[in-house]
Image 1: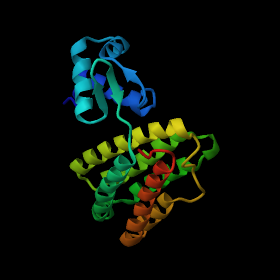
Image 2 (image 1 turned 180 degrees about the vertical axis):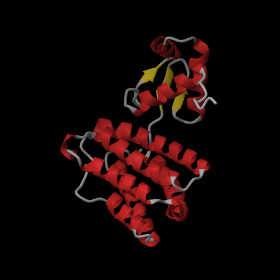
Image 3 (image 1 turned 60 degrees about the horizontal axis):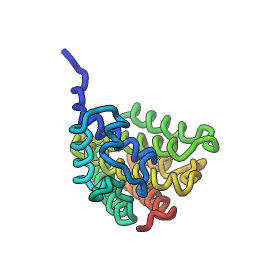
Length: 220
């Protein structure tokens, strides 16, 4: 039996690579580029590039500027607040199922992820902090066992990642690891099966991230 994931179409491959360029801060909101630039960059034909660009425009990730090309849509403070609200719905409503499904091994994995955050924090940049945070929250949500929630959470975190890309150009030393964080208190609450405290610490952690993003110049 073949358990490999289905092979992506050329359009989907270009789409994902464009998202990566945006999220890595290599395509910034003030940068204009053309379809031909991307055809040359990816070394593919016009059709998959055009289809990927059109999809990103429909998703409001890009905007088309007639006779000029394309531009990355800047993440605004409203975008951040809207996605934070979505995250609160998704993550907090998943907690009862997470509490029901979580095992001792899951608790140990979350503790391990928290320990990774604390190893040489002074040597870690914003993107390492982002990856640690992303992995932690996606691990928690997946424990609820709802594929639709997982997918919605992935989309929400992609928007946050784009906000991080904007943030990276403004300030590179934020969201540093502390000796203790809401993640630690949250995991401790899960271990004690204290759903009320887990709810409060998770909510505080999500809102802390919103405050960090909105406090760095993402204000349009």
